[in-house]
Length: 327
Image (cartoon, rainbow, N blue to C red; front, side, top):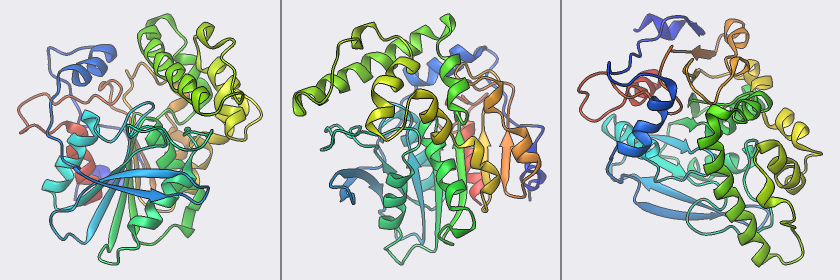
């Protein structure tokens, strides 16, 4: 057994980037632009939520495995993102069934309600887990999340604690802004403008689409002038989802405060050079004080990067690491 898996605070990571790919920004952008992976989760299923909305789940279950991995994507992503399909392919090769779930409004069709998704929407992950585990063939379930989806996944595990369904026995998360306030401030920096501008373009479009469906319910009076998550979350995310303001949303939706309550083996991998993540998003104290929560913080890797240093048959280091941890 790999000794690193026995240590909640993993002080030495095995990840090393290719010699030609240096720096957090390049390690973030390169796989998003240049990586190509096959589409694995081709079978779509729609489930209804208790509040009258829906979630779209994309499956790969061509073989009758008794274990299933549930994958959650990042902000303004979806189940077809490269990192989702790369992870799905690695898990299928390792003998897992895989379901990649789409947050509300991210599957290619707008959701029905005025509300959307957000970093603390654990009720939607709970609905997915409950639905998936109605199939009694599954003796094991693992949760894997990326960025925003990683925060939802870790918060779900922490909120449930020891009361989590016993079939859910592992959690893995990559590049997670587990302290939303500090991560939001980090993305306001000039060096991160390229990422923030892209996020804001997509978020503005979704607000305007909502305005067409719900006339008079939303205002776009300051929308074009918004440049930060503080502005957007204060005007839209918080009031639409029951939070007082942006600060209240960040505090209550962050996974960091509940990491110590996780009661199943959980691995968080955050690269030290991730341009999205400030020091507050490396919860070493929580890992040191937990028998279950593992923090691995390689010096490099970028945001959902982890490009392999050598030939690996198409698998990225993060995919190999997840499969290893799940066992």
